[in-house]
Image 1: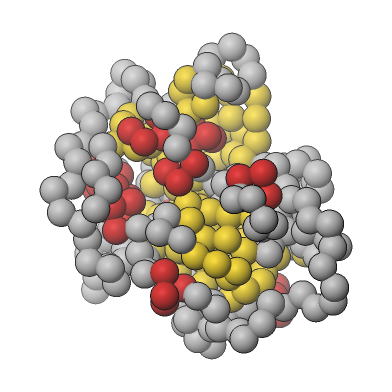
Image 2: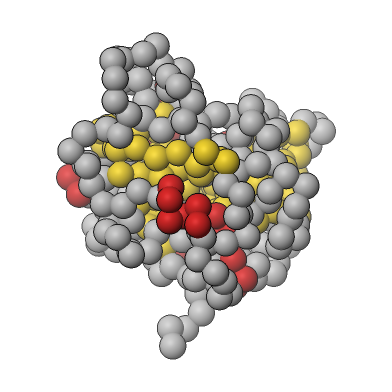
Length: 304
């Protein structure tokens, strides 16, 4: 069992950090998802999202020299970002104390809580510590922000990231003052054991810097390549700016999205000999921190 402590940035309005969980959550534990306001079905979701498992990767052909974009770039721009699940995903514009700026991706896990990569909220290299403010735009599409933008200066992470920048725990959150998630919805999050994740088809969607300058949402999908105790690896095209994007599955046709990881690394973050992008997995201890962060923001609505 990994023992994690929640860590908050020293914003004046931030409450005291939570104490660490004493016990691990059950392996199949998960948080509730939220549909948000009713809207028409997304045509992009119907044609692009992958569901269930596959016996082999979706990309065929001989091996190619891998970079973060793995071989031929197969990302697809999402145009109906005002519809689910794309509207649950946010472009982030991040500012540090020195004036340094960066882009990233986040996604709703509750009405007022956004999950992202740890290095989007705290980075010694880029910000000299905590970010000072982050502008959040759910479902941004170029100059269009269908749900407006909000700024936050309240962030959280875990001690394993803040103290030692352990890539297995590159996880952060953004606390919002208003419940934007009630409009756009939020992802269910699950801590699935490695054996259950093997062979699943995964979706990754976010705001890359190389296409659209962090203002356009791009999606790609493929099969899980391998799973370790704390990471999930996949042959899915990504680029800088997509750090913090959700890695999610649909267990079957018609099933809701379930996030199982937070995209954070290209091939440079993979073990030697493995050409893949990767995400810290949602393990039970991380799931417990996510629950604490959402409860800190008022929790989930009561089920009707």
